[in-house]
Length: 393
Image: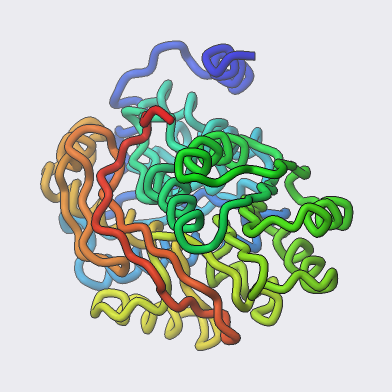
């Protein structure tokens, strides 16, 4: 099924009109001194390990903005929905947020599969989604603002650094859905062009917990590098089984593109010590905006809680929406999107800005290694990378 036919199928299944007025979901959302926004993430299911905390970061930003007077004098009211790690549920909940709740914007989704599921809803109903997760690129929608890294800002940067610093042979393992497969499709020619070679590529279902067979293959092939795009709760099993199988991270470099400090809380720091990751943000960054963010997050949710890349991107998204609304002088989607072009923000990851036209942010690629405390020591930082979601590989 093509992407276009998939969208038509979802539109038909949800009972969406083929044409929707730009004001259909905007009317009445900013009445009586409040403005509604949606928060849509997996608060249950296999992705809750990675995704529930993203909603916490969005709620923190909303609380801070409300405490400072709100947006254009209106307090933000969050309508929180659970996508339940299920793509049709994400689509249904997004329709509810736009049609029934009439939210001004939605901060949500985590996986590319969930984003693809809601995309036709937002485009048909003229809603606005802020998407906070690193992803494979190859997309630009008039109804989505992408606040995390696309592939040229993460996967390509990671692969070039790995082949330069850590070896030439790579084994790729991922969860079986859009982001891992497309990311590895981009990673392969990047690795080859850099002088490396791919020894194997394998995918397991999202939520898989048995990695014994693929770990045995990896041990037999003895790659210099394991490039992991395993996602969500499966990382708990994957890293524990790597450890139990005696894979020595000081001899075999493991680069996990979907593991942040938050996932380490569930995996166990002892199981990821010495592994690498590539993100735009780490909790260990020392800039004042990040120190404020980390302190506020811990004060609200507990001293043992940690932040991570998707949390930072989600927190920043709320502030970017606020800034665009105030620049536009309006909550209307078209005006907010237009006002976002070139918009700059000094956030937890440092200074960032929206591209003039493609709805993505200029980003740093940062590579670091996990320590015994689950925090990341940065070993490489790129200059700001211009987003290029449709780069040719």
